[in-house]
Length: 340
Image 1 (cartoon, rainbow, N blue to C red):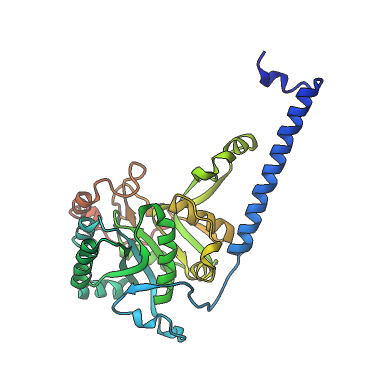
Image 2: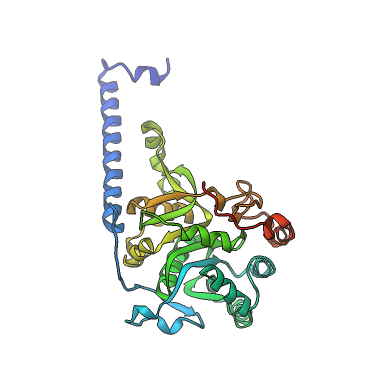
């Protein structure tokens, strides 16, 4: 007879000890998890923690031609004001993606980009770290000089450390720009800035907003936490809501709270979107789900288009961006302020 059947009979002392050990394991593990969660709420500011008028911490921005002089200034009024700041996360292997973006929804010359920013209230920049490869840095600086649409972060550009880059991005953006929303976007999506502007401009009752195309995923997604899996199976799968990684936005109050924290107070997971989602859960922010941020094709209301769920972004973005831009539904349809 299987051992799982004998588990439910308590006459044998061996079975009693086994039952007691399992019970102790469950209780101890649950207590440990609750303790971790309590600590994270204390560190990250649970229960709606909010900082106002905080100065940026641990921000080091290498290059932003128009705003770099404002870093370290005590006069916060010098921060460039905008309705939203859109940081397009990119890397050293993505030069062709950036070229395709500049041929489609993002203007390639400084004057046209400035006109788009004035029309939409959105400042748009590519975000990238540094590398020790002198040849790659040289090529990047040529691109920087030509297009003037970058912010360089003083961190090493590594795919395995995207959560650290994301945190550095929000801190740098907050230091440079006084915006109502800070938008993280990937360089492999087709974006309609005019429609994103309307979405960000809507009246909201919550000052701490986490806006994105929301999904639910397992709490225990980090490989280092695999030993939790048996417990989560026994207790019933735990899930929390977080935004898909290709694009999401945080309100100014949320970013201010992130900026105020010490770098070593953050729990980093292997996935960037899960990491942000965990922080937002601990901060008790308002989750705003908008499915127009994850559309598989251009429509009269789509804001961001990418190949969900096939790819995390557009599949073959260098080519697909150009193809989408040729379609009337992507470029010529009027901007509609649709309700969900």
